[in-house]
Image 1 (cartoon, rainbow, N blue to C red):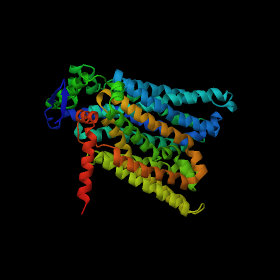
Image 2 (cartoon, rainbow, N blue to C red):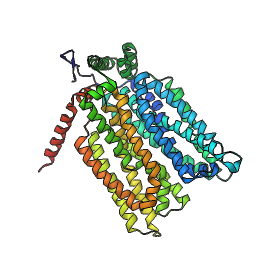
Image 3 (cartoon, rainbow, N blue to C red):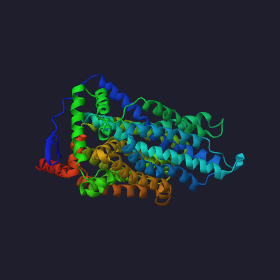
Image 4 (cartoon, rainbow, N blue to C red):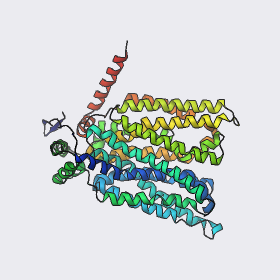
Length: 506
């Protein structure tokens, strides 16, 4: 039962009716599938370079530094796309922002695929390079927007009982997109590599298909009912809720959302002004930044971008590494399925702590194996492959999905797009730095030093989550908003943490 203070009085929202079953569940499933094309595009565009960079650099006459700029330009652009996308979605709506995002995906792909070849093919390399980087920046803006807007859209559409599994589908779509990129890269290289030039263009062109599907599909999808209520469009919000809930539940949820909206109307400020004037909101944004950076500092995207380089460093040939790299995509999808199954069963904090414990353990094991098994030992690449696969599986099963779900839940409605945008901006920034310098890191300190560094960061991240990150599972977004704004959420989390500690004492 949630309480909201309005004009000095306390009003209580009645308990929500049971979720129940019905055709509305099918409609909710359709909405999540269409929206998750954004996640699929996110995954494909971040994964396609892992295999396309070689032939791309050769045809365009790019140096290693230029290749690094091409890959990291998407990631750095994504940080700004996350920040801008969140603000835009707060202003014009989640649905319209996703439609604009689909257009950016298509146009960015077109620019990349039509980049002019290098001088040996009769063109000026600088022009082709500029086109390529420009297309990657456009794709990065779309990827960043997808990383913030799609999870928020799904969280606001989903009932709180299954919000974790619905929102988590986006992360499953992301890793499915990365797996699709790895598989398609290998198939295209194996079947067309000896017959045509510019096979990397075919690899990138595949991105256009889900972009068209996302654009057409979102034209038929509804706007977020919570955003509609905030904009005073009550009847539209109720009509949307009735398509994804029973009629009784839809009316009850609408009343709960309206209570929060009325409360916000009596606040002196909303959005950025409210954030800057409330120490609890500032605190939750800082925690959100920490959670987002923690996800990236595990090094997961370094593996997804440069997995073949790590495997080659371990002792595999280039062909073996390209084929073995598919294993990372496969276990990422398996881990995503495991995560969806557990998302509404395990607390978010518990999931974070299990995930960080496992990933840090695998970091240490990779470093030990790399040091104990000298170069040339036939077991070295096999053992390192198995351990890195274990790391990726742990990451996807317990961290990646949970992080995106938590970020989509934690911020109040009036600043949800802004809050997640700020948090993800910093996460993408860390991602970009790793994308730019990870090859140099591995070259400089080797696999042992690189993974030991990730392990040290993992220990710090464990302490951070245990001390600061609040719990969000099993609570309506409206109740979470009240608890976050007043700071009550930290009191509740400390009470649960103390109770957990006391129950473990003999």
